[in-house]
Length: 464
Image (cartoon, rainbow, N blue to C red; front, side):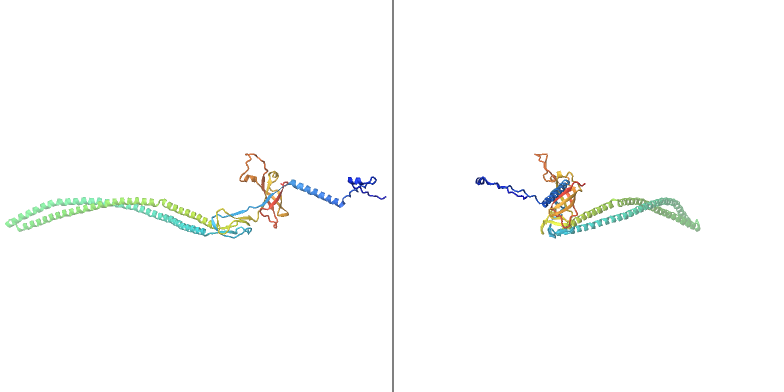
């Protein structure tokens, strides 16, 4: 039996209906649509399954991760500044140039600093000489004081010995005074004896003279013999001799008394001098004690030591000035504190810089990190140490691995110049963002992370 497909009649407008004759037959209806091919159904099924799998993974990833695209590559950029005000002599690096730690970046004019260092060194050298002189004065004063103490101690011993000698001399002189006084008494006694013999000798001479005159007269008259006259003459000569001897004895006794008195006076003078010598020696002893007390005082050495200490302190002060001058000279050479790259150069040769003025910015070669600003509503389950997936706009298709290093203690708005004052005015709640620092683990060497690059981060909040 042959099947026949009828074609449905085409719809006609009113004009056609009017023109057709009533007896004309209607056209057959359209045939049914064909089913799509099996391979298309299979492809659609695979796509649907793949979409379901991807969608499930996306949903699971979205549920287990907190993501943000408000993130960038950061680093602890170092601003190179000058510590002194000086003119730039030379700039040895340029923008984007790699530099190493300790490499010279800028040289400043150092003529004034070298002059200041030379002056500081000269002042220190002069003060060191003064300090050495002060130390020598301490040693000299100490040695002089020891010598003076020994000398004054010897003077004390000598004065004491002098006092003993003077005392002995005074005692001896007093004994001589006593002996001289006794000799004066003895001489005076002998004078008195001699004087007492003179009258008897005079009387004997007078009698002898009278007898001689009488005998002479009688001999002339012949009453007596010449022999009697000779005897009376002999007696008269003897009496004359005795009288003369008694006078001489008196004179000798007077001389002896005078001599004894002179010796007595000399002995008294010697005794007085000896007594005066004792006083003199006692005065010398007192003087020696005073000199010893003066020389033995600790204040002399103390004053010299204070001067030496002041000189040494001045040396230390000048040492500090030398160090400052040397540091100032060292500040004319500005070196890189880290390994990195010159990010910005704000100076030119010949310009004068001020202390604290930014000259260069050094971006570190290593140690970059990610700063991701997460909403406060996302921070509930984010913890330090959780793994992070990082995608960088510059490197499509590459996922970097990292981990949460720190979470900021406050929102960025807290540190703004004009922080929010929610207690005043009309309050409008705004979701705040808090920065999270993420470190990148083993980034590929051929894909360097440069500061400022935009990144997207996803923190795995299911990890602890």
